[in-house]
Length: 99
Image (cartoon, rainbow, N blue to C red; front, side):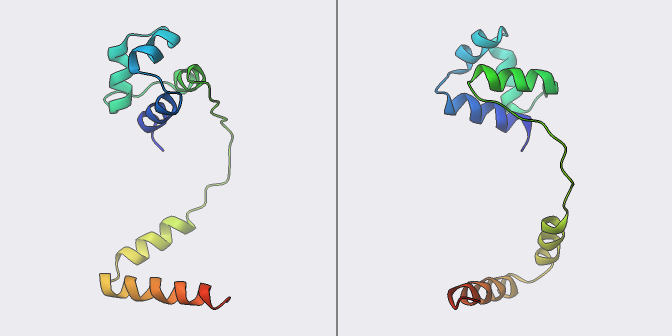
């Protein structure tokens, strides 16, 4: 998730306006708006500060990077829409049958 989406989601979940978040974070509302629009990206430290100003935490930790989902999506994107639908229906049918 990009920083713009994180900031906006945290603000909205906290029930804050951009002006209220800006006040809590000691920033101008226009800067918060630019961050939310993705015009500019805040530093990691500022991102954590903004999320905390909304009453949330943003734990940052290293995890192994898994490309399996990306690889599967890339392969599926090369299939025709009809083939993708058939695969989905087959997977759903397989789930329903308990397998």
